[in-house]
Every structure is written in C-alpha cells, then in structure tokens.
Image (tube, rainbow, N blue to C red):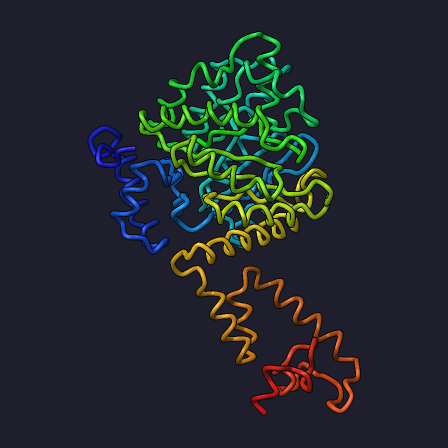
Length: 442
C-alpha cells in the first residue's frame, strides 16, 4: 500500500482517518512515525480502522510491532444472547484484548454487531459468510451477490477487518481426503460444501476484485482466512495447508495492488518443532504480510486446558514472527466460551505475546516485569498487582492465601494476621522465618 497516495486517491474521510491512526499507533508503539508509515506502505504492518467505526482506538499489527492478541466472542445457534455477548466484550476490553472478532452464528446477528460497534474501542472483525449462511435455508443456496452484499453492509456498519476464505479452491479439496479431521474451519467447510455441490470455484475467489473494491471504499482490512488449517497434529503442515497458503500469497499481491490492507491467517494445530518453519514459510510466500495465528495448539490431548496448549504455541509463534495471536479458551473443542473463559484465554495469550515481545527486545516490553521485580523486593503488593497481566487474579490469590493462613499456627512467629503490618513483608509460601528476601533486611 502506498500511503502517499491516500490523500488524493481515497476519500477525504478515509485519508484523514489513516493519518490520525498512524500518529496514534506510532505513539503507542514507541515507533517513529516515518518508520510506521514505511511498514504500512510496504504491507508489513496494518492498521485496521474502518472510517465508520467512530468509537475506535486504532492499533497496529505487524511483526515489527508489539504482538497483538485477538479475542473471539459471539453467540451460536444454541447458546448466548445480546447481553451476554456485550458482557464478554466488556471482559475482553478489561483484560487486554487488542482486537475482538464477532463470530455470531445465531439470532440477532446484526443487532449484536451494531451494539458491539457502538461501544467497542478495539478493532472489530467478522466472518461475513456466517451471516450469509444464516440468511438461507440451505448453505448451498448462498450466492456471490449475497456474500458481497453482506460484506458491503458490514463495512458500512463499521467492521474493521473481515475474515474471507478466498484461498480454498476446488482443486484443493481432494487433498483433504487423506486427513484425520478433514476441514475444521467453519468458513472453509461451508465453501467446500458449496463448491462440491455446484462444481464451481469458490465465489470469494472468482469475485475477489469486487471484494477489494468494497474494502478499499471503507478501508476494511482483509484477513485472508485459512480454510484448510490443520485441526489436529496428525494433519499439520500437509499439502492441503500449503496449497492454500500459496493461493493466499498471490492474494496478498492483489490486495497491495488495490491498496487494501491485509493479513494472513495461520495454522491451528501444529507441533512445536514445526512452528518456526510455518512462520518462515508464511513470511516467504506472503511477502511479509502480518501473520495472524490460531494458537498454534501444540497438543491434542488436553481438553479443558487448550488455552495453555495454545499459549505455548503462541509464544513460540510470536517469537518467530507471528504478528497477532488468536486466543484459545478452556472451552475450545468443548463449547461456547463464557465470561470466565474469555478472561482465562486472554490472560494466557497476553502472557504468550508478552513473553515473545520481551525475547524479541520490543521497546518497553520488559518494563512491567522490572516494576514487579522491584515491588517484590520491597514487598509492595499493590504495585505488583497494578502491573500484573491480571491484577484481579493476583489480588484474589493473595487474599485467599492470607485467609487460609489466618487460622494456621506458624510456630515461633505465631498466627498470621492480615491486619498485622509486619505480616505484609512475606508471602505464606515461605513465611517470615524462611523468606530469602526478608531475612537480609532484618
């Protein structure tokens, strides 16, 4: 994307919005504005900022910037409602999501999205084919015109980025027959069924130029979806996955020619030893487009703990160049996440992103770690809580430990009491007698 052309070739509103967003993101990222402008112009960084999303605080996404974390929310056809999803949105904001995707597939899709956009200060993403599927009795009745109509409507509403599975092609489908789990992407599966039924090419692929025109008018960022991502370790890094990635690489080129910002979505389930290779292949094939990865989930045997298996892979993925991590919650593979799941998933993935940023030497990344270390040395509990990724959790566990120890004898030191000022100078793991940081200060 050539940002120098925006002032003359794009609408005044879009051009003005981009200029403001560049300044804000450069300040937040502690990156010189000229450097950020170069990254956006080259397509190595993006700023999803629909001109119609008036509540937005823009962010930058790119491997040269701080690693971002996305939280998926949204209802399903069997669970949740508007109020519950707005509560999840509030939780996502409170616990540090950089972007949010509304993946609603149940009732009141437009109402939920509209309500989210009114208050959402984060970039909001969607998957338009979900709404298309909800508007027809049989998903094979979806048409290209319907898909483009929904993209246009969502763009006018203010959606900042959209996942479009344009890279899954008719020729790729036989490659999935060898898989243990086949196609696990909802959008990918819908399009695969449509192509098999009609014997025709993916409508997003055949109408990609029309799609780009809509996105350019509203400055909607495309998230080029991985409809053939592996859904288990047995299917990782296979021919189908990389065939789609090759197609997405060509679409990155088309996006840049059309001056439409884009990022590329990455694999779901891959073992640790394949993460670096996957990041390097995306960098090469997609010419440095920001990589947005789901996890990656590095083990298939931990239902209920997939926020941990995903965060392990996410940390390594971000270290090797992933620009944004899509969180996984404890409910992954089990059900629709609730508010508690959103909180746990976000904290796990923010930790993964932060750990990678520290290791990559991102400016300011280690500051909160150093502040907490200093506070620990001084037994300054409030500062420790303030700089924690989840301050509420830290406070909860500290209070729980104090409550549990309040009724337990502690030998020569007597009984611990939360109201005793002296007893604040240690945690209940070591107690005052064995605290290694407290003893030298006596």
